Length: 116
Image (cartoon, rainbow, N blue to C red):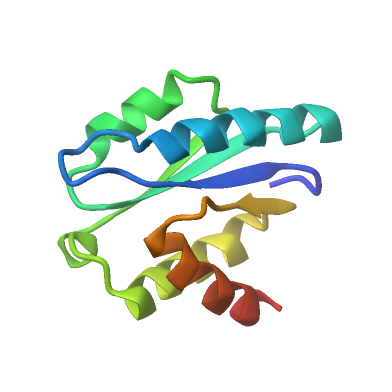
């Protein structure tokens, strides 16, 4: 990703829907991307998230990354942090925005430490 691109960490409900926090993050991320002259990306994690990813793609996101695997069906912090770390190292977003959710509260500090 170019130096001014923004990525949001979106969450999918157990029913396979986009969480309300994700919708809020798309709005905030879009504002940040526009103000920095960058693009907006989203990352979704889990299993069976293709429909949610398609929905996010229709909401003004320039790129949707899906980390999809049966191993990611249930939240396991270490596994999720590993997957997000690899993606962040690969795409190098300028800003990664995460909501104030149980999952993000567990993942964000670990990921920040690893990414320095």
